[in-house]
Length: 56
Image (cartoon, rainbow, N blue to C red; front, side, top):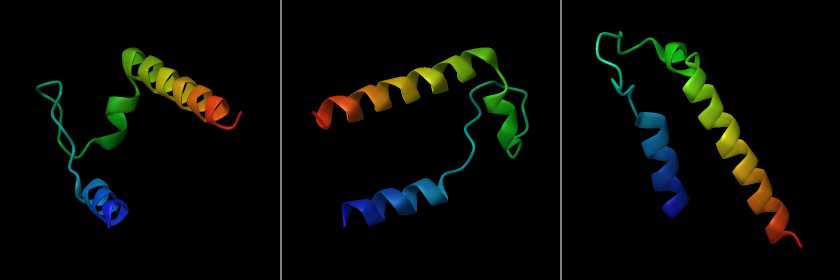
């Protein structure tokens, strides 16, 4: 049941206006900032490390 709720909420989420002045439905724009790319890479590395540690 929990996974159904998470899936529903993630599919129904809308764009957040973190930086004022941007268009709400400009979805790719948020991924082009360097600090966002660094954050995405860091989250990927942490997820990979956690998965590796759990499999030991």
